[in-house]
Structures are given as C-alpha cells and as structure tokens.
Image 1 (cartoon, helix red, strand yellow):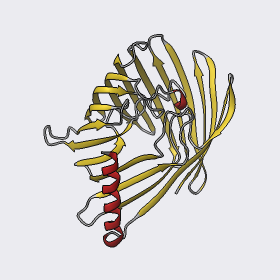
Image 2 (cartoon, rainbow, N blue to C red; image 1 turned 60 degrees about the horizontal axis):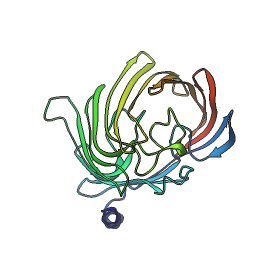
Image 3 (spheres, one colour; image 1 turned 90 degrees about the vertical axis):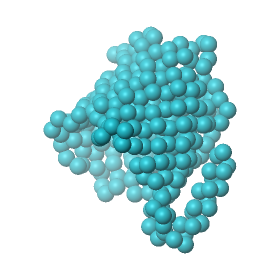
Image 4 (spheres, helix red, strand yellow; image 1 turned 45 degrees about the horizontal axis):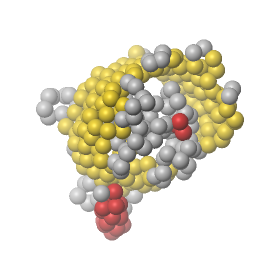
Length: 290
C-alpha cells in the first residue's frame, strides 16, 4: 500500500509540473543542544520534545487537490524510526486525506503518530462540531486501527486497534524520543480529552490520555495529563510553563520554555525540565524557518 501511495504521489508530482506553478518549498530546521545530569551532552537536528527538522514540498493540482511531502533531516537515535519521510499525502483540504500523516488524536501534545491512513473530516453531522476520523494501516508491528477526534476547543478522542503510542514523536513530555517502545509495543486502546482557551495574551491548554490494553504483557495501562500556559507579549517572544503527570507509578514533570526572535526566520528556544523535583535536562535550540 505504501509503494502504491508513493507511485501515486510521483504521478501527481509529474502532473503538477505541467499544471500547477504554485509549488512551495519550506524548511523548519532546529539544531538542539541537550545537557542532562546522567547523560552525555548531545547535539541533534531534532529536539527533546520529538520535533524533527523537516524540509517539505507542497503544491496544488488543477482539480484543487493538495499534495504534501516532508522529509526528516535526521531520524531519532535508537534505530526504531526507519522512515526518512515524515509525511506524504494527497488531500482535498478539510474533506479527505490519503497517505502517511499525523493521526487526528487530541491536541498533539501527548500523542503524535505519523502513519499511512485514510482520513475524513466533516462538521455536517452536528453543526459547528468538527469530526475527524481516520483508518490507519501501518506496516507489521506498527499502528493500525480506527482513530478519531470530535470537537473544537473541547475535544474527545479515541483509538481502537494495535500498537498506538510507539513513536518517538509521542510521549516526549515524559521520555526521550529515542526511548520509544518501537514496533510490536504500544496499546490497543487510548482515550483522550483536550481543551484550550485564550485569556488575553495567555493561551491555556489541558490534555489527558488514558492508555489501555498494552500489546506487550510486560506493560500496563496508565494515564498522562498535561497542563500548560503560554504567554506571548509580542510576536518576538513567547514564554511557556507546563506540568505533566504520568500515573503507574506517579511521576511529575515540569518544564519552562521560551522562544525569542534572533533575526528574520531565526529563533532561539531554551527549555529546562524537572522530574520529581530534580533537573531532568536542559535544552537550547536554534531554529530556522524558511
């Protein structure tokens, strides 16, 4: 199925050269330095919250369909993340999407899983109530099943299938990206709730996810709750505080982050995290967006 998808995207790319002049190329790259009490210092082209450096290409075909492809500049350490492409899909924006994509679960703070999937979006069933549903079919030992989210600022999400939560892009608030379980691990069910609200220049966000029915007998279900507040006094700087709790056993993580504009398209992003009152790590990223 993946091979057919790539062939299809190549075909549409050929059509785009002849029909669609509005090809867009974007770069979102970050060089991240990390220092931790019990780990060696590292420099990576991804940050400790599981966000890759990406180069992406998108274009619109004459019928109005959009094609998007993004490539990672560096994969996570640990050997569990073998795909160099982060996403590749074709879509009728806001209606359907087919290809490798991030699944519609929650706010993407706790869980972000990029899998080959067929997705549909609508708000016709209940007026002004967005509904996103996707059927994921990853390779053997990876995510497969139904996943969806209902709601706007307040949303409910659910997943039923196999191997959910296995990627380094997920759960990076409570583990390093290269500590993800990888193929054949994960959970068969996950349920989530998320809520966001702006109060003046402060953006508040709450998300909670419950993991049920682990694929491996050595694992057990648990919950993750995250609460954050982000203050943006201007377009040149933002400050964020966050608290995350994982149950079974109870572990608390605190983080303080900031982002400063250094020059056009260049940002400095420091972050410090604590786990149960002790320093977990310090990160400093230089980010370029073009």
